[in-house]
Length: 472
Figure 1 (cartoon, rainbow, N blue to C red):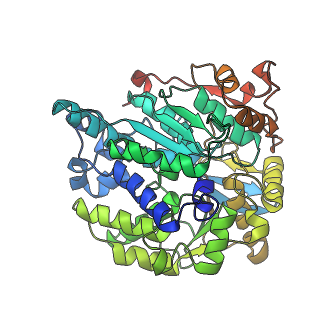
Figure 2: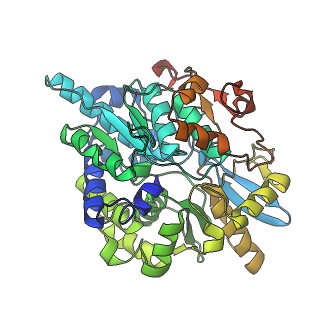
């Protein structure tokens, strides 16, 4: 996902203004929409935190639960340290993680727009999701679109991530799910090279036709449920989760809710892409005013989310949210911790290995809970920052919390993903096979071509994608 953004200005031969305009057009292609009757009839307002506190918005903003649940906060002990884990990885038995919260709105908006277009005699918009080879967004969109009964999305894998079994598994998961008729990946052109610039520029006709192109990372504000912590550590990719938390803090305080009141409260974001980390370290990419119009930055997304909330009739919390961003958000951008995009750094790999070997995770009743998946692409980098700061300062007055964004479930649908991978370009097949397992808890490999897929399928969980199983 973010490798698209990071190399756009130079290596892609796209000017930064052109790239920004394209990303803004992708954002606008999703937009907002009021709910349709089936959404109002099929969903409980109590299931949506935003609607519970601002009930008037239920009639103005399309939303689907996607069968997701309120996620718990678990306790974790690790070699004398204690902290909390917000289990967004358990949001859905089909595919959890932070993308679910965004898709509850974006897929519902698409559903509502399609229904109204058909009712008016027009053409229902299609859907395209873009990402890199190990994209969580592609998997999440394919899973939950199918369970909602939407047409399968077209997919464009624009670039490879670093070879890693976790990244390979995400592509295999996506290939096992219902996909549209247009599936492309790097290396798919007649010349054997589908450049990223050409791929991005190829989105323009789809936008012109009125299709919905989900932005890179599905960047948009999202909400959740959380206990009142001190520091909250989370990975920052497309910035939607951190932006949603900033808006949530501002809104909770405006509404007088008993949350985010610890004197040492702080949101600690760890950029997962080395170039975005460098830009934040040197230019304050996420907070400086000159970048407020640039998608994939926290400053831009907070402003857009606050404006959308006010447009829908909610309170305007722009000033409060920007104050939170300025004074209560801190970024950890050290090169040795961030490493390269799509893979562990040496620091995060060591933190994940320690976690896998010694973490004791318990639910609210003190019973053992499933161990989260500390992938090198995302969560392990935030974990490393948390552990380092606990070691340096000791136990804080209010507990530190890790926001777990990687799904615990690695889904496998009804399609034969192994056969689908064999039909992909050779560069994609080589990339998938090069990815090595990084966790002692999840050993496996993508075998050589012609072999059986036994090397990785034990890490996947069969999921139903029938709309009747959404829980709606």
